Length: 405
Image (cartoon, rainbow, N blue to C red; front, top):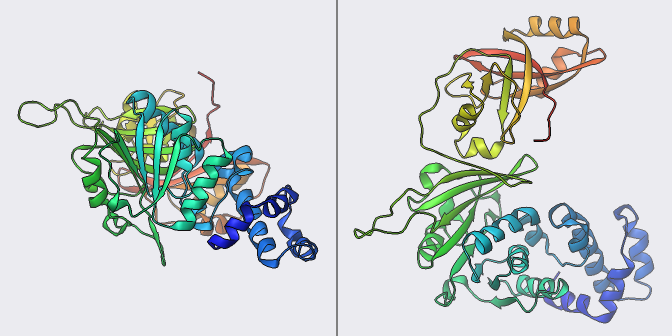
């Protein structure tokens, strides 16, 4: 879709076309396109159908109500933050830090700007791509937020941020060959974003959740965020440490945090040593991915009065059942060395026909193991392929019932 096609889509004829596609089903696209092209330009029909497809995909990120009114480009939707995550971050800016004017650099189609505006922040949304800016502007208008969001098409390096009390930067992390893992290969590079962040009172930089801890600047707090058990992003926060003393040094170390949505539930490092590993107890706890990425598994072990099953494995074990938002609990029924024949015989003896296979620290591929196990029977269990005290081990168990606390 080019700018002319998008402009036509915003016109009366384009809006009528989009309205007619409410509830459209992709499997009927050929018939729908043929019918619509009898009365409308082919280019406009193609743009409307593409937008209808994108809106359906956007429901997972933005919810049905917003997705039905918003506009997207394929890359813009792919890059956009999930609305629940953007809302959480916006609340941290607005309520925790009192931010009122923020520059959103690399704003994309405006998802983060929308969340910030809804939290009461006035936003300057900047992107260098003209079509993306027009889409972001249309989204602000469609959601009734045009008075809080100013969209500007400009290179982010040319933006004057002196009048803003905060900056949010979401650099592009995809290229022609897919995801970009080197932070200096982001567009713009992480080093540029860090330099900008240090020029304002508060800043947040969105980065890939796989960012190495050693790449986090010493004056930045790092937060890994998951939503519904799926790790979505990492954020580097600036301005989190205490006030500078006479020497100019920060009074405290910025925190490392894992945040789980919905909730939010946030776990922060206390800088204590890891608990010693020990034998597998009656219960096993699988920490959320954000906890693992933030290197806070030991914090969960302390909360549960538990221990690690191995110094290098992100499983916690204990002798008491606990409910925590930071980990999924299982009751363990069997602990045995990994031997295919023995495992297959045990599952057959138990009548296990459905097995959820999880692995951490094992070279065995679950899909291949499932074929070899030839499961049959009415029962279900969870199979953990892991290491205990360095030895390949299989654990069998069942999920603990989750209680509302």
